Image 1 (tube, rainbow, N blue to C red):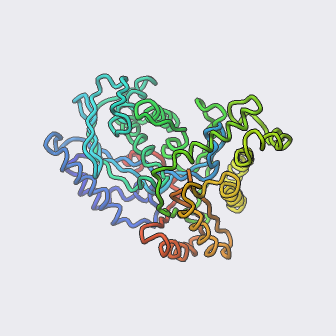
Image 2 (cartoon, rainbow, N blue to C red; image 1 turned 60 degrees about the vertical axis):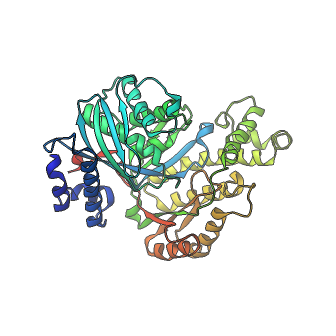
Image 3 (cartoon, rainbow, N blue to C red; image 1 turned 90 degrees about the vertical axis):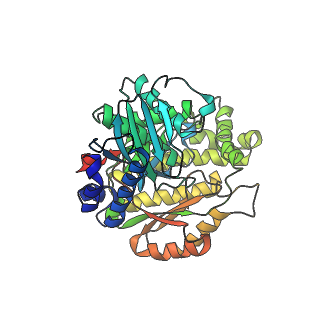
Length: 436
């Protein structure tokens, strides 16, 4: 599609088939058209002086993700389930021969990265988008793939700080564009996710697992076994939540995330202290019977909370296996029973619903209480803490007929913009033209 034509083609409906695959047959098609047309306008505003009107332009989309089960297990080589969601980053992009990548993200300054010397890690660039771009290019080259220049304008509906992985989606977006522009779209989502993780760990300066990048790149539900973190086992159960009449609801309870590092760090540290008692480095290397037969000694050596967190990990791995099997069987009832048990374990054993440093602020616990009041009488509804916990979001699987009541209850407590009704998106990182 030529740059001079794409806006009118979007508005006239030429991309509607792709939009409906990404956002559902019942999506607000006018809103989606205007969103993409607005991104094209943003591209024109930024790059019209250096990009010709007859340049070939492409549209790209990468979803955010929601953690489903396996809460705080990946750092001890556990098992997780995550899912792509209907919130996404979209990009309008054009190839260039200028030896550079230039990305303007809505609301942020433009990032310009030369393709020369992308293998050099610059600590002064840590935590900047330019470091991610450089790191993805470096990862492509190190893995024998081609890189190259492009101009891109991006806009995102994946809220920062919501636990829906906006940074992983951006990483996968850079890989997505390079994949289709310079590698014929032949690089697998697994490879793109690994490269994104490399970029975040090495160039961006932030340690992370692979779950976020994998879930954003893959689409649908994804089950990941981190027994070997460098080569995780990835499965994609064929399961469509919407076909069962459910919505995935996320509620942002707010709260102060500024001083939670100690809370987050305590979980892997305490879990590993239990593993260390048995001469192991991570909990994946021990069995539940080891803990149960040594509880008295473990309480004295590691403390009660560490023991409970270890039990959460060991039970959670079993739940992830069973929940994955339920997804494969298309058994929504069994699946949700394991999600409910996982949420209860997070609240009682893992204990990540609030920080003990500020017991006066317990947004997640309050949200779970409100959810219980609304949903416990509704058959099939399940709710739980979402993601890292201590502050932030809860997650609920809600039958569609109860969604409005649930959201009204949540917004009355946490504000008008606190509740989000999402779909599990079946497509991961994509070029939209390939969906037409």
